[in-house]
Length: 260
Length: 260
DNA sequence: TAGTGTTACTGGCTTGAGCCAGTTCTATGA
DNA sequence: TCATAGAACTGGCTCAAGCCAGTAACACTA
Image 1 (spheres, rainbow over the protein chains, first blue to last red):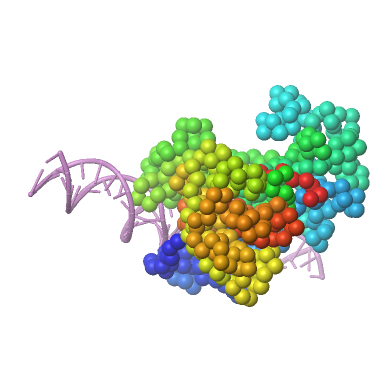
Image 2 (image 1 turned 120 degrees about the horizontal axis):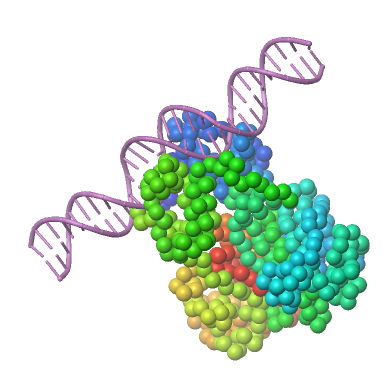
């Protein structure tokens, strides 16, 4: 709507941040390069060390830079954005690849996926899960499986899957992580639940400190939170996964009928 | 994966931030309440004013608090999250309400929508738009319409719509904003383009300074960026809107077939 | 030549002080 | 009683100085 006269009385920390940003965006500083130290920036720009530090913090908040205690501040490589579409849940992809939706999508985009089952157990579901799966929120009515997902060795998302106990009981869905070819959704088909529809609820927010640590997130990067509910041909919900995706690594790409 | 012993040598700024956060989350400090001033916090906690200031900045970065020059720092009300589904583009909703997708969705959720056409003109499209609309990126092959969207008087998103010139030329799509009942998509149907599919590409990132200003975003709130492409029954793309949505106000809720 | 210890670098964080600029409140005068 | 000006509050930002803790580089000894 309006233009702002930017450099009218710009504080020194912001001016330095702008200059450094220009060097990064312009290519004078490349991914992996170390910035001059706080003390060097302070000296060469005639400002206080804390003012220089504030400038670098601004760039960190923008995701352009990461500072490491005792080592320095480095220009971040902007990671390649993975795109996740709904076809990753289709039988076609599952049968052609024998892989999980995550693995199929990442490999299709030329990168190296890895997943680790961090935790599995029978639990009482959160209310929002119970509502969507039509199970009791007051009893241990679901199995919870927590997976960590990596691309080229870097954590990119965490997925917490809830499966109604009545579906999972006595099957490998409730036990280990060796789910065989076609992964989770092939086992659901074995149980009579062929995923036909997916409901994707999407929000974004900044990570908590624990989430930022777990996903090794630099400053200035939000989380994309996707609550996926799998439904069969009769639109019965039979599993729900809440994904926390690093927004610098992950995007969504869905095509759908508007009156589904 | 691991647990962290939190309070082992916690810096004073973070300890104060934790205490204040506890008061906010616990209800001792309510939305709209003013925090004690930086100077008061410093005095009552036996720390430096800058240390208190850093504590408040941490809460600002988390979106819990907004600081206002000369006035104070206030606890933010957490806004109610609007949910945008694909049915907002359907003929059923359009005919039942006579409204735009945005208006229909917001009213359905009990709030008050408003939209303002900020800019309209024939332009040369960005590359990613040209690719999706199958038009030339080198000529003025599209009409660009920029809308600002408000809920209860607060800006919540900006939508930039691109329409191929060959569709828009000589119609009200290319002129003003008085589009009549059913808004944009009714006029597209007039031209023979009935939206049947939508492609939604979703990412999240922190806003630029200009975007934060335009959308009046507090600290610690990301943008949900949605690139929507409208396609007709023959899957021809005929319009594209890039939405920048405040992630504290907006979420998406799509149900779709997995093998569309 | 390799290992270890020390030095010199780095970022993390705090302090006390100060000044600038915006907002609010109070007092005074018309 | 109302309006205006000044005082006192508020956050924004910088400065110089210092100490802590992590990392890297260098020198010395076996």
